[in-house]
Length: 220
Length: 122
Image (cartoon, rainbow over all chains, first blue to last red; front, side):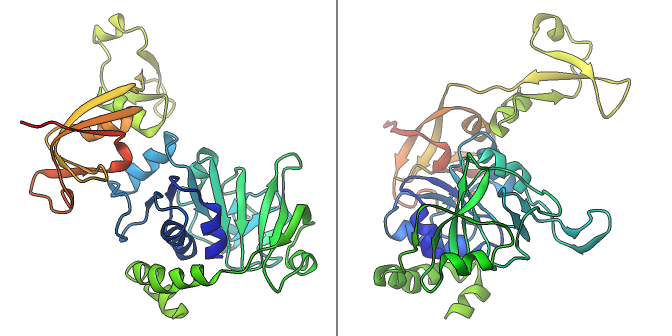
């Protein structure tokens, strides 16, 4: 997932990384150490990140259109790329309550490239319609442990761009709760290269340790 | 004016401003609008358009080569740097690590807000 995220970033882009986003953080640092040395990014606690004056200045920066890329996730993500961070079930009588928007409702429409990520790819996550629309926008792509989904603007729906090694069009479809069309040119995601793995393990994880100690410990 | 700059920095096109009612500014500045406050029915509030300077020419004490500029905390230059489309900073010195250690009363304007750096010697 980190490699798929890193490969999506272009040199010189201004990238925001939200709270509780260790996988995007790893992807951004990997990109910075490989093909995109001039990335400008926000990741409190990591050397070289932009020292914004708190979240307020970061949001101001994004709201006036300076941020190129941001990462969002959702308890549920639907066919149209909408995310739900609020409730499963009815909003007023929820079966499960989650923390809420955390700024996503502002950022999704105003940031030009929003990359969605989710560490679980299953029918309960990828649903036809989210129970509550926390945020709506046009996603650049969705990165999961199984696949990279793109967005067909004409159809207004997520499509399969590539399936990771060991997966197939069929297996990804089976894990998705809505009709998932294949994009033209659908292919297997190139496996992480030895160089990507070396940088991830040797350079990225040590930098992430102060911010995401549990995440790094589980991978080590 | 600071609230109008803050609106520019926050990417909104206008902002409500407390007070101002009864001021001749409202007569001389037709772009200031008086509307009913939607959250306090019957009360009026003044709206002013955001200020987004094309260019901001600012001066700082020192900077690192990446463009992180150290300035004093006594002015509102940091807000100006956020509101403006293009920001040029002159500084007395450029050196590695200049923004790493701050004295009391200093703050950093991050390089993300700065488009160009000029070394002003002497």
